[in-house]
Length: 213
Figure 1: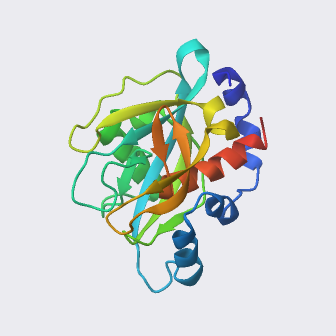
Figure 2: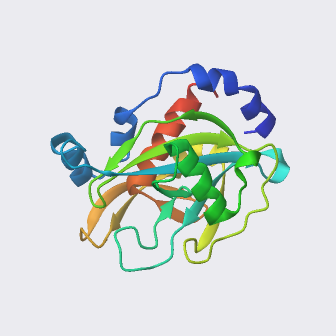
């Protein structure tokens, strides 16, 4: 998918209805669907976070999406693939600011280089009690990425054509800090298994963009 075609379609992308939770549930592990249906954020006072789904021109002028792999650490999201972003701080004026601030801290993208296209649907994550708000953005050129070593183990640059293709959907058995040997739907992107909350957010993004492309 050419980046020029992507940028020329921004007006359409802005005006489409969001696929929302039905798209999330398509890539949710069965246990997560049950949690979301019966728990949700109501009464949990979830912490807030913002993440950025950033598109930019990659090799051959193809539209690329940036993902990151977290370092291994004692926590629920250890060594997992995610979108750049993090928790909202008291000084953040809103969650879009959070997403842009965290993207600059984690991967070195200045907010001034990002045009935010629109918010996507928030997603509640029961294991960490976070409600994550994704924002779709674009940069006119490939940013000079710079990893924050304490937060980012690897940068993963994904061609948009791979995200949109069903050829990159897989099923894997995973073991995490909160569940053992569970079967999960996932994306296999640039050799990385992307599952859980990130896959759920990416699936809404995929459904939104496939309505245009």
